[in-house]
Image (cartoon, rainbow, N blue to C red; front, top):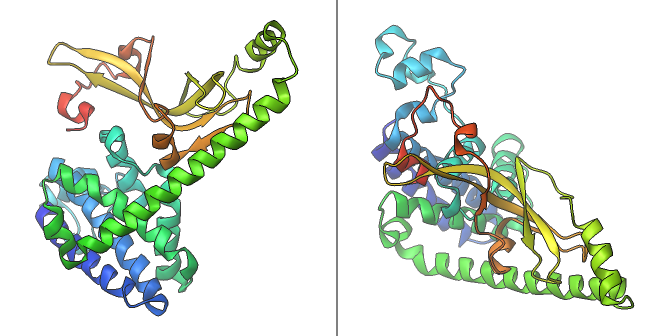
Length: 303
């Protein structure tokens, strides 16, 4: 439950993961497993640095007692129950969503690969580079928040880290551009034969409601055809300079346009204009706040 210990543990596991990765396919199972553990420990280091209670299983009272300094009344610390990788990621994502490039869905391959190796010795080695890159991109903003120097954390593997991330970004840009080309062709096929007035009437009807659902949806111009599309994502309430609540925003993790069928999510959003940017809602922020719990401005801002 000590943040510094978790940082050190994360670095050791990551070093072992990278060492296994460079050994080639026969060691890829170790690589993805160790990378998953390293990521989990780093996420928990951030949470524990805010408060140890943030990494324990809230359903286990003895663990909460240890986390709040009342361990004398609890079972031994060795019986402590903490959250796993997915829940640690979910909690960190809620605290500073704009800085984490890996959303809940994008995390699944890493979590599945780690669990597959740990519980049943199963892993698809062909997916190792992609899975490993998810881990690297998730770790980077946590290192920044914890003020850990990347060269110190990645050590002699920093160049490998940079190449893996750069290659993944290149593939994402190609994928995003291909989706735009396909969507524009679909739009032309559907509406190219219509007059402008006729097309406007049809588009107003089919784009008026979101076709994807999440905690919240908000309209956003489609980067492919210019019609009204919809982003879907989580709700964030931000504060401002001690003057109370600033506003309610949707932090997007998906987009869909009914006019041209462009549908993107996760890390591809950043490559398509402003689709990844928060959308301010015309809603009262106090509707999303428990009156009995004052907002911590730094945490609400993700600092």
